[in-house]
Length: 238
Image 1 (cartoon, rainbow, N blue to C red):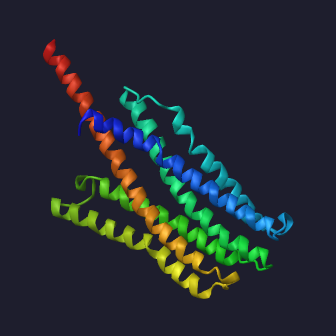
Image 2: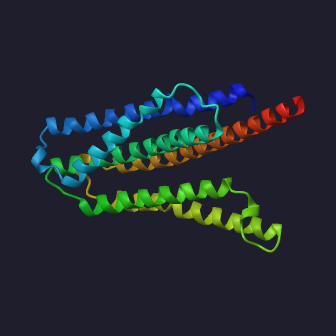
Image 3: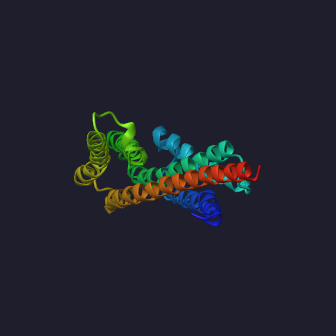
């Protein structure tokens, strides 16, 4: 990887992905606001939906903070902290979008006087837990086999593969939950297809976040190797 590529990765994680996702999230929040314009009264909206929407707005606004950090740090420690922050914020922003779209269905239900808290809490918690498993799978993938316990290299590699498979399967439980939810949740205003849309978004979010983590690791490795090369160059010069 060249220094220019390293700069590109830093810039790609800084902007415009996170900001674009934040804008899309805010758009869906505004779309949710139309539900209030067409019949839903604020006092009839469930507190859990209002609280989660407020949290989603905050996350979306925080997504614009990386725009303030235009210059890539030359210090490795600062570079790692900043890039970690950018990556985490990008991932959280993508996850945040899926929750925002998911909430729309429950606002529609509330507009029709139907409150589906049990469906909402089960669906939301399943998404959170499965996102956690997906991140654990990615961190396991990036971890060297030598760091796993085992008597031989093959044992360590096999243990890594077992963990990868386990976390991947667990992360896909959310899709089973969405299928069950689709067939069991009341079809409010013929909008049950929203659950399918959310399922597609969840899969896209998982793929996107895997790429973000991969790009982050590439940048970490390149910056560290660049630092070692510079130190070696100074030593040879001396």
